[in-house]
Amino acid sequence: MGQRRQGQPVPADGPENSNGAERWRQGRDRQFSPQVVARYGYWRRRLLFVLILGYAAFYLVRQNMQVAVPFMLQEFGCSKTQIGWVFSAFPIVYGFGKFASGALCDRVNVRYYMASGLALAALASAMIGLSPFLSVLCGAVFSPLLLIAIFYSFNGLFQSAGWPPIARLMTNWFSPRQLGTYWGVVNASHQVGSVAILLGGAWLGQHWGWRSIFFVPAAICLLISLILGRLLCDTPESEGLPPLEVYEGLRRPSQSSDGSAAGHATFREIFCRYILPNRPLWVLCGANFFLYVVRMGFFNWAPTYLQEARGSSAMGSSVQTSLFELAGLVAGILAGYISDRWAGGKRNAVCAVFVSLLLLCLFGFWKVPAGHPLLDTLLLTVIGFFVYGPQMLAGVAGAELGSGRAAATANGLTGLFGYLGAIFSGFGVGLITDHMGWERAILFYIFCAFASMVLFAMNWPQTAQKK
Image (cartoon, rainbow, N blue to C red; front, side, top):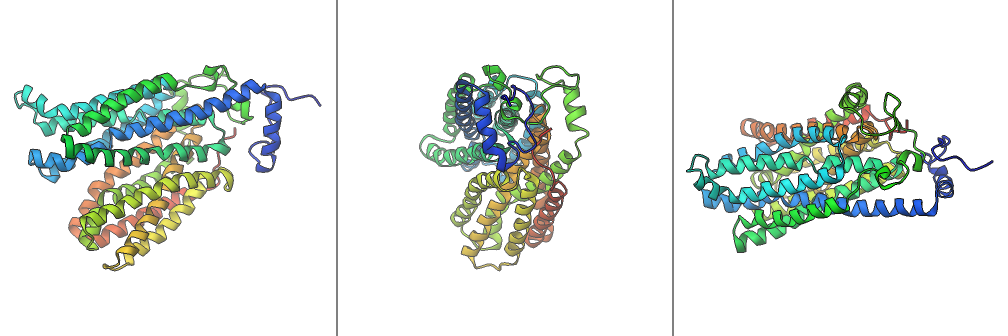
């Protein structure tokens, strides 16, 4: 028989079946010229490098606020409650902004969208450093703290332009059998950026004052935004390459609902066809909500809990919490690899298993008495591992449930529900702790983990989209 014509559907035992993957790859390489295969490989490698650099940069002007707070408390003489209100504005703006950004991102060229978002976030960060001077110019009508809250909220809005473009690019350049692994690699960039600003920001604050913690990262990010605008790409078609569906033989729609050629779907088509009737997507959103209660609850409250309930020192609790974060770097990559290689693209199934193990670790953490710092550290590290694995995969699953045409919107929706959980975690855990103590707070985490596990399990059969 002759070679399969370009764009002809692959057989059912094609790339989606691991036994036929190598045969499909060899057939694909015969179908397309060596130049096309080489250019696809080049753009994929380049895209991974630029996305890792770009998203790590977003965290340089996102986590710097936490580094600057101790210096700001000394200068302004404000309370932690006042600073807490500043922090509470960020997830609200970021969560809703991420959803709106996802819907917009499916309609625009992401090459410039992500670069513009980083540049504006950098400018908002620089304005935080200028807040005391602007307060003087305004005749004290706006206090420095109020201006900081305003600019930090704008930072959250511009930060929301960071991940939705990545969701769209990854789903348009990488097949379902690759997506989990490479998504985990790119997702790890936020921990790289966090560590860089935690270490570099502390040094800047000690030697050059807290304003430098905002000015220097802003200058670096403005430079990186230019690099993003220069080196990023949009779809394979924009680079003269065949669509991913054709190149990999995927069975997912390459035409819009009206039969027109693949392009930017309308807002109505995105919501009415891919989002509103998508029951598995809404179940996933609920699972991500409860998972984020646990994730952000430990991230925000673990140091205080360890000091007040377990007797850890300030430095000891910081080290223990940092291991919680570092475990997430490994977990995201490993969870993606497992879902690609061993679970056949069943992201929700892997999430359900991870969260069931998280549930056991939370129960153990609740039962361990005070005075066992090594056991506390071990359990906190393992909890971080089983939190960040499904947190990363939930983004992959959301993007795939939206298909290639609404990936950024679906990812933004799951992110919105996650950050609603983060908001609930902040005041909810504080309220529980004030009235019922830390024991009830840990039980609250256990309940949320159980709810998340049940919802992930409801989506157990869902696999990467192959329509």
